[in-house]
Image (cartoon, rainbow, N blue to C red; front, side):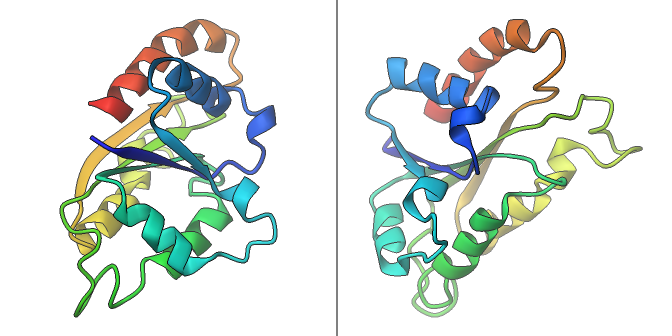
Length: 172
């Protein structure tokens, strides 16, 4: 399945988890395109028609980013607002994302104790807007992959196993 990673990491070179995921993926699946929004749009001026044309060419879209204040980075929010337009992504004539698969890969600095219903909400709850967006545009939401606690003492050990799970999620 032709897949694109829409990467929204404000500083991928300093990333621990997201950079590691992408390096592992490039070794096993170099055909998967990584579309880095912060690299492509440092001025935040999004080329809407180019982005829409990009998405048309793929069957699976994986949004990858670090949680920031329990949400997506601001450039990704802007990108969705500007690219998923009425008449293109939804509404009359908006059929370009129907039946495409949409998933999310997120990393957090916060540990698993923080991402529970009783504290700030589970990862699933916090990703509900992405699932709802996929449903609204007629796409199939395929779920998410996550890595919690990027800066904990055991992070490097856990990340090795998590990389394999990430690759399976992206390529399943």
